[in-house]
Length: 301
Image (cartoon, rainbow, N blue to C red):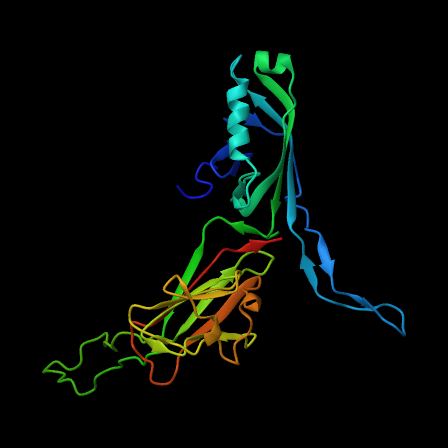
């Protein structure tokens, strides 16, 4: 089932398969770190001979998300079962899993996180009557950005000319028939990607053959990624700009095929707003089967 498939009501929080909020055994009162800007590492360097400093890059640190005031309610004598379920869902582990939060009628946002700390007060009365108050969970997301749930996708084929109108057709006794058929429209090799958030989004880019020297260029900035590789009809070259990987057919690394005009994969992002992109290949690559697909989620700080 897709991540967040059970988040249907304001106040719902889903971590993996665990659902908290209205209609569950786990209510909550306060969420911190979700709408806060993440802590920053600053590359600013003080000036040696003047007031002030040289401004440096600002890089966001991991996001810490704390869920306080959790109230666990069960039938009398069933508290241990609910606590064990909570413990199993938030067990210590290295892998990050989807954490999705919906606060009101707006679409939910998600990140990938792991649970760092779980606190459940223990009292005999709480376990006996089926109510425990004051529990808490703390999560850490190594990528501090929050994302829309639905992944967007755009695809383009290599530039192809339009067929145009065949002026040598016999118009017949009644002349040309209107509207005139100008043939199937050609491909421009262009595509657009809309990031509705306020943070840069790292896309996943897939080149499909047959073609040589695939590239994708941000028309506005001029930045491009390009690879000196020949792809067959059944080949796919996948560029994960967040991970900085380039793989052929899902396994073999082809990062070494990057050309001199290509920017580092990690810097090829979709800024907030509309990005105009152009898919190109080496001269002579014109097979209509060749394509470039871009997948992304709008990103928010």
